[in-house]
Image 1 (tube, rainbow, N blue to C red):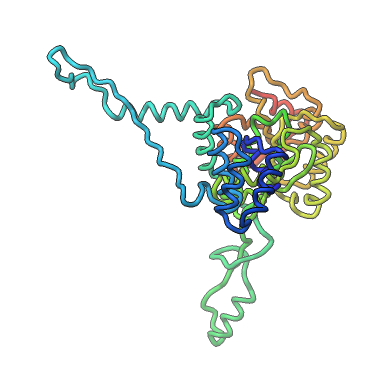
Image 2: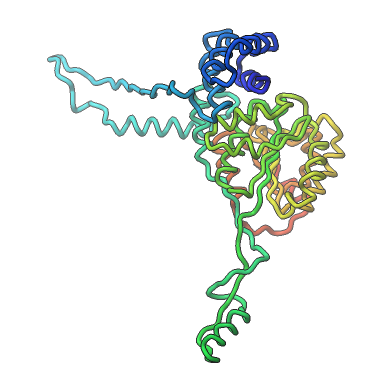
Length: 380
């Protein structure tokens, strides 16, 4: 019940300790194993406003059964009615010559979606945010392929002597075919470290949904963590098939949502517990943060250098990079920038689509100096 109340508070329901105690007291007189009794005990005690009812239904279904709507109460279908003004002549007949064709309505809708793709997610209305969330869920964030050490049969490549000799022996000593083998190719591991501090709260939801899309398209080669004042592994919570249910589970698992930022300490903890043991070796590591470091910026620089030695590529997504005149002058960004391979924005649906391409792109890079990398990343 405490975890369910925490999920409700993350969804915007004021389910405080007093209301939670009232629900527990009500369950003392009911059958706690009956979903119907649990549902009504919580609805009558935890909801204080009519607007909380729909949030309660979604959270109850997602928390106890992994569904996006309460069983037995499906959400009504959304009906969109478009009113097209048709000119009427003086005689009362419709002027068919000036009638707007139906294709114009589809063109206008597509144009609105295209404009929405470039909007900053921090300034969206609830309806616009829902549409952007749908676009993020459709992203293909599959990673690039890397060459594995394991070999597999192939039509060309190095000669597979063992298979060739076995074939010769089966054929009575006659050489009829030469077998070859080549290195297998497997998806490269991707690790996402998403800042959920107070300064990143307008973008944390969209970035976590991007992490869900990466998990859905990256099979078992993707890991997602939240960073702030604590390091939290969210891979299991975000593997839920439905994005909204995955976000509810992730919000319940994050203990430091909208808190402070200690990137240096959290990055060190990640490298000590996971990265040094193999999770970051040869991987693409994405850090989504604005660089507002409350801890020691020098520690962040040391850990970024350590991460850069382990990872294949280090990508940093800063939503503020898209603002006109932005320069990475915060202490965290100054310390991390020399160890970053790609510096991108990630403030909109279009920027997140570009970020997915950066993760999945196979590109040859010429060696550049730290100063050249800094100049490139600062470029417009």
